[in-house]
Length: 327
Image (cartoon, rainbow, N blue to C red; front, side, top):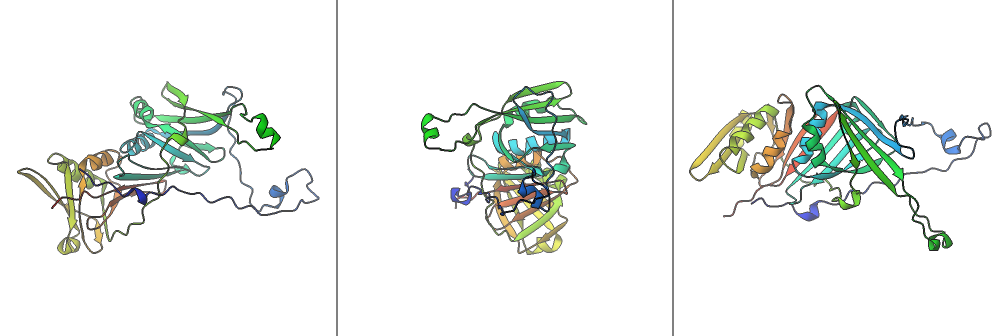
């Protein structure tokens, strides 16, 4: 079985506190808050149409995306986990999570340019049940657009008489509801409580000495071919392989053995050899949408493998622990 990553590697992400600078009111603008008058850059808050929403609810996210984007997000995340904490801001959508066995991690950043439209009010973290997204994906056809909308409603205050006497501040509690819509099919429901979802991990600070660039199509073909033979794969590149820009992939099971020499675009570093679980890798490559995209692999000797897909609109990083074979 796969050797799990050390639990201590994944440390919860701590976001820095906002920095506030004191300001003075300007006489010419008595009705405008000083913080706004004195600021050099005034952030434009997106205007979201709430006319069709139930009274009392506020739309905090309204975005549309091409079918390929929705499919990639769904398949990328469901390769490892059934639910996630999704962070949304004015500029991007971010998810970082680790599977329950601590063997694999995925980190995705989809910038607002990835979407056909993307309007957000403030920063929010919402809980997403990916099994719903996976089922909804069956209704989404090529060239369709998918609407993803999240609204919130502030619930009645749970401030007690004792809190009032002691002048204790009680933070507001919100109820979040989402909507997925495409081609006449619509699903609505409540988001998951983010406090019930595993906290965001930190990216481990592992130095991987070898970097390999190859096409996604070559990676997919290599992983699928090995999966036909075994449940594990050995990836290696020695000194000669480095000079020839080739990556060797070996899969064995009993008397069966598959050896594939992959012609890469480039290899730099000191050489590497590690064994990985194909159960994870086969799900990872299933999520890749464009076989022509360039994939970067970072690896070492019996170290995790880092698989990166990146373009101007989004970045996807997988980290998979090695499978250590018993002597």
